[in-house]
Length: 437
Ligand SMILES: Cc1ncc(COP(=O)(O)O)c(C=O)c1O
Image 1 (tube, rainbow, N blue to C red):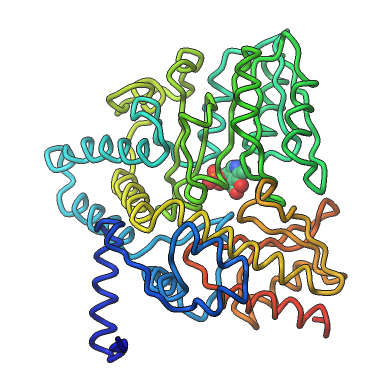
Image 2 (spheres, rainbow, N blue to C red):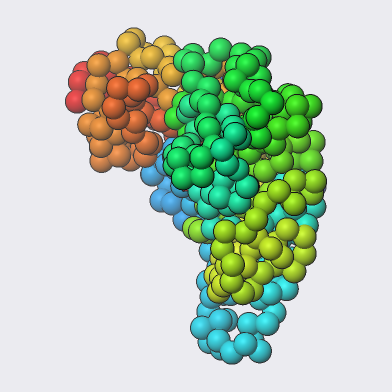
């Protein structure tokens, strides 16, 4: 049947699509059926279609749910993600409602809204609502753990050397203050494989080790950790685990109960595409008695660990409601489809970049060692100047890594990115590597 591409029909289908993503059933989203020839040429696209049965037309419609101008390719999900229109609408309407009538009577419903959001976050993560603390970001969640455990002289903690400062300096500073010892497992590049890190953490541990703190996917070069194997191994030795999920929450299809971490952290404003200053700390039921609150105030949550760890005083409840909306939006697209799509785009990037003379990939290309964070050294080019040229001339936004340690650029594609944006990014890097800046 020929497709009707008249403007009114397109406008209708866009509205229809937006309604589906805002609250409709995922099952109602049928594949559109274009782009098969392209997929045959590009093996990585098969990955996305295998899991999500979506084609480029579908993803273009997803892209249109975001307010980023269509000529701007933002390949920087690892840093900050945009919110979709349904999330912005929820945030605005709930904020306006509070400002129209800030009475306690009118705001009472927000406490229930916060608990409903907790249930949504829990379901999204394969956790129980009693295990969820709604934080402001991953930094706060990581620090609730490092400040909340009772550790002192004679205790040891093993951390990964390439953790984010909120899970690295937080430990080394608190070790100095409280007298416990931190052992560091160094990062090895290229990623030597999950077994290597499992073995290195095990060898760094002894009878005094209380916790392993590592990152599910690193923000530097996207190293993926074997979380389940490491959590199982730690548990068998009576050691707790803190897993930083800032680069996985909202992009990998997570089941925290199955993964087995005692503590798992993430930000709503990264891959989940929620509002700024939303985040999560998961605390497994049998680890809850180990954490003491570092902030004590009013307005705690009403169930489980949130009753003790979430008494932060006044909160921005509209942001929390919009955070839940962002997770509903992702559930409607499909968590497995999002994981496969972002991975397919990352593989396309790695494939394209590795064909440019002089470009060195810091990210391991195998799917058991990386996911959707791609870092590379752009031949002899200055990463800062290249990043500026890409943004100003080519309308492509990534992130820069300066210094001597794996310097270069990072692209982190997500489900709102298009294959054409990845192609543009590869072509622009190739142009500058060939002709200079
Ligand atoms: C692995 C990791 N952990 C923690 C954070 C901190 O996230 P936030 O700034 O949202 O607290 C980041 C931020 O990039 C990160 O990549």
